[in-house]
Length: 170
Image 1 (tube, rainbow, N blue to C red):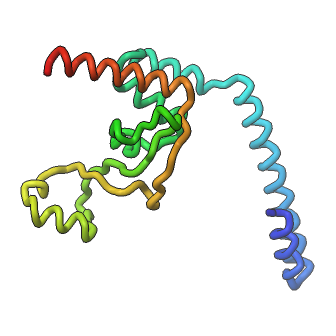
Image 2: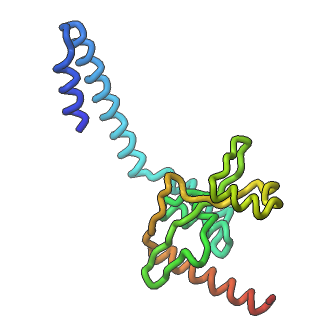
Image 3: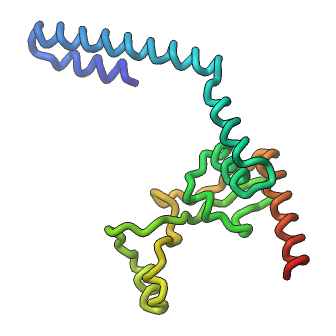
């Protein structure tokens, strides 16, 4: 609790001048905090982000892979690299969840392969030229994310579309 922490700091202050300075900063902080909440509440009522989201979805209409990826990221909070590393094995329609077990990342000049990646590169040296690689999720945060009905339907539609294309094109 921030109030308890501030009280502990106030109790530790030695002089009256330091106490007065601390109280003034605390009051200013509380004022900024209250103003932030007012602005947040005002924006939440107006929901200006909805207009930007609508413009983005106008660029990527339903039925495109970009629309599906954007919806997944928006409604689950999934990171971009996590979303683009999803595989059909990660989708469980029976349990209505998405298992997040990997992410895709771009190699930087500071790329240091893990022991597993070193073994893989030793066996397949041609992979050294790739700029993208699959790794564990950030902070090793493997998890199951619940699917909303909207995401589940979008994924089912995409799965059926891919199955139809496999039959058609082989």
